Image (cartoon, rainbow, N blue to C red):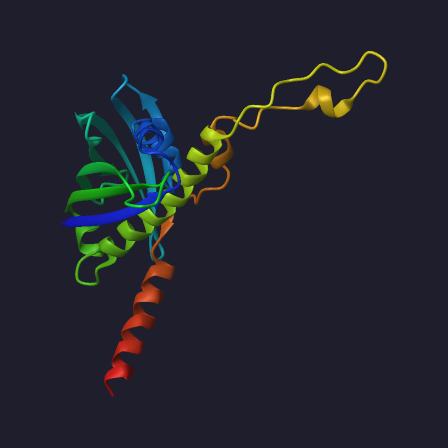
Length: 216
């Protein structure tokens, strides 16, 4: 199954490229995903939770980053996942391409082409209703929002600590912190614990009903 997505972020190509090559940052921006081990600079292990209706599935796996073209900003992320209760597995190859948005200044387009192969019960759950495509689209949408927040924080100027006046001590001065804290620290508590398909199924159902009545 091939998933094709595009999103834009308000950042330069170099900043967006830098963010996408930061796998811990990328994982932190993905709803339901957690990084569990850093093997080396390009190989990692992690887990991700997906809610398919009343069923919560947790996958553990490994992902590897390959930079295909550092000049044209093309990279590939290979991932393989196994469901922790032996309900299936998934492998994916995602090709990322970063290009400047035409006529938009400091804005960058990110194209994501993903080839997904599912096996076991996981494949059966998503068969016939387009749920995998819907989950993939929602995952990319939320990821884009989180990545935008992370990149915005990376580009914020730091506020240097200022010593309090000897004659007039200032509590604000003594507690002033940088506004450029690590993005993954601020995103961790905000991202969804898992991707849920319930709202996606409901949205698909309403869309089909509207199409049906439109034909009457």
